[in-house]
Length: 355
Figure (cartoon, rainbow, N blue to C red):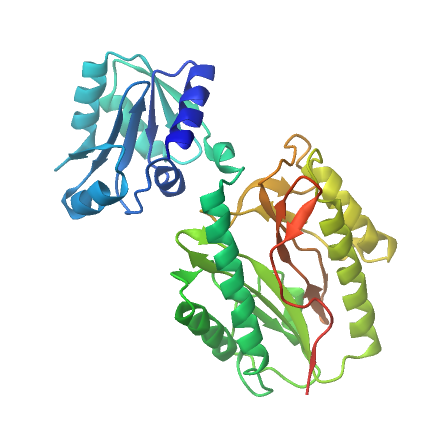
């Protein structure tokens, strides 16, 4: 935690900030250890304060051991104003990408004597420390084990919702706090929906079934996608799968320190484009993950600035989605290292046909 606060204070000095207000849950937890749902960090060059209400005083005291815990009752604004006045600061940073317009107006009214400066802190979380990597690896392991369980559970005639429920239940049994996001379970023609959440549709013989899911462990997320076939795959299904797998393997191979997101995306995307299916791959290749399921850096055509560095964790997930036919997506979570990347996801990527 001390290293994270040093990193934050360096950021504050670079942006000429005397004080930083943090209320975004992921950033609040990252810089304090506090996982409650209400509270604000007030960090200056010489003090760390966590303002929260009656419900979380005991939890905050136990988790945020490097912070002075302050309880507010009706309004956090007056307490903030009093503390900032006592600190004698002028330049106060806040999370411009998180605070609502109404929240900003309220904050402005409470802190009329200071200059509020909008900043974004998420980039400070891109490079994971060893504690974070351990938690992400465990979250990935839970998802891998749940996928193995599903392969012995799924049968034709089951609904997508039934399979998704078993998947989520098994992850919880293995120690997950919750699913990383609403489980995507898209079979048959619904596989053309990149984010097709589990529905009442019954899974049939001949369906491709795309499963995109993850676990949360100690606040950290995992993300995996596998597409399987119920029964023998047709020639077209085999061909589409091979193209996506080749693109996925090329993308993983391209992940390395010094690369920018657009560069990695292009290497994988070109495999699909060259096969004639470029128009059916309409999303970015991948994204960072950690305390949130979608974080920086992005592996996408739009990312021309962020350079991959050691200890960043990203997904690699190309797909082909054909309207009125279905789709295929294959996704791994990978850890950037000195040589390139380490694939954390262990589940097989070969086409699985279930009989």
